[in-house]
Length: 70
Image 1 (cartoon, helix red, strand yellow):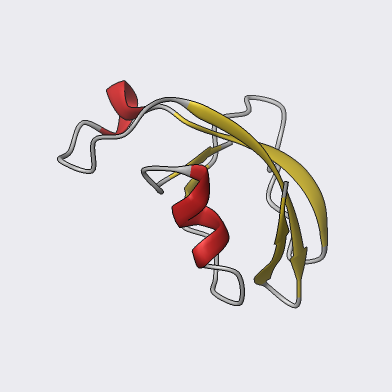
Image 2: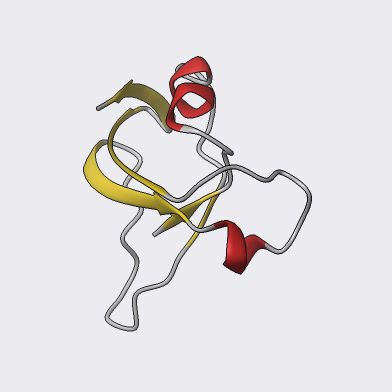
């Protein structure tokens, strides 16, 4: 799953907010409103001016909001 945050720091700053993401799996939805999953930021895929470098993170969601980013 891809996220739309230019850095892991920016993703962590959005704890308590809904996750801005794009599903990428051909095998079903990866997003869970409650649970953990891995995400990646790929600037070459988003093709907009956020910039930043590619990163990966583990996100924990609770009630549809970001609860934790590792």
